[in-house]
Image (tube, rainbow, N blue to C red; front, side):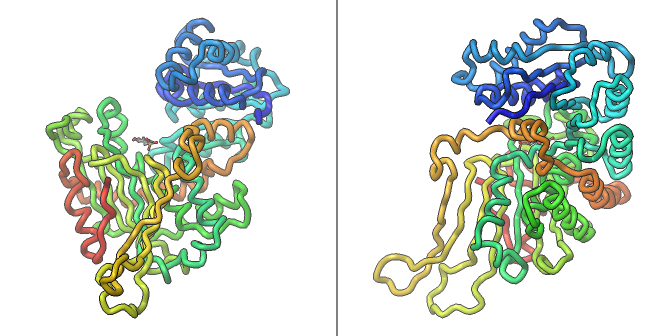
Length: 478
Ligand code: BG6
């Protein structure tokens, strides 16, 4: 179903995100018939460039990112007809009149701020003073949304000068991932899980986002950020919220975001001994973190493992273990819910019996599996064995399920539809920083150095010990 006619302006239209994600994402939605023929996409950036030059850049970007079978020349030409360019000076007056002349008031208007946060205020102010953004206009902003609570608050205040919260779409692209949304479907559309989804039946939860890539190429950004700000404060926090939140009364933006906010606010402060920071070392396959970051003395972490407690009725006594890192053994994002063992075993030979484990695989190989204990087949008596009930979505649902849209495709369409459910509210972002800030401040005060770990490994040994000392272990990274 096509969305309503819209004008979308991408500030930073020639930048990396626009070329890798936003423009190819819009093209794929067009390819699928979701963009109306009258949609208008305007790239806006500093350089002087003609419409034709910009279209050439967009064509090249799409050819590079989109699979060839979806890149037929006619469709691509038709899409490029929707695209134009305006050279704009974010901090001056150049280009704004021209942009104003292109906007059509009877449309959905969306302004994507794909630029550094230092320009948010200038852009918002000029959209307002040139009367470009109408009352229903939407603005889209990317992470990093601030660097700590103070900067996030300042950004929220700046945006609030000209835009209402219902107009602001803060992207966390993890929320646009198909399987992340599935987490809500699994929890709230099945009777099977929710009654057991609490500290009485769940021993612990593991949330892992492991990457094989390093920080080469973006070291100057990453070295000021580290895994805590780059991944934990946003993506892992969102996964934690969706796993732990109470059922919202309906699938509506504020109902969902209210519940997520309660989880963040219920997080207990994390003592230093429950956090392990790591930094990857040079190895046969590539340079170490410090070379990649071009900072020989860097103390920034490229890995974090931590144990969290949520202080509420549902989760009292059930720890959540989070880990994320660069240059690890495998690219795996998953949530593992480990249930408790049955209170009493009636079988004498129950050496094979263990607890049920539900794994929600976010990427790759999206799907779920659940281990159940059954009788080992054969005449050898009542011997027990754990077997997986595996559901890979692509196998269960056919090819279409394997062809899932990229998170950006989904999220940009939600902006046009005016649905904020999968976007972070201002208070949510601030609460996440309020929880993160003291942890980071503690490292600085103690002048803490990250542990070393070998590139291509599962992280520092202390991360394994974090669970071993509780009599648990991480699910293997495969
Ligand atoms: C980004 C981080 O937000 O998410 C990157 O800045 C990280 O460091 C990326 O690599 C991971 O996203 P995905 O979709 O590849 O899991």
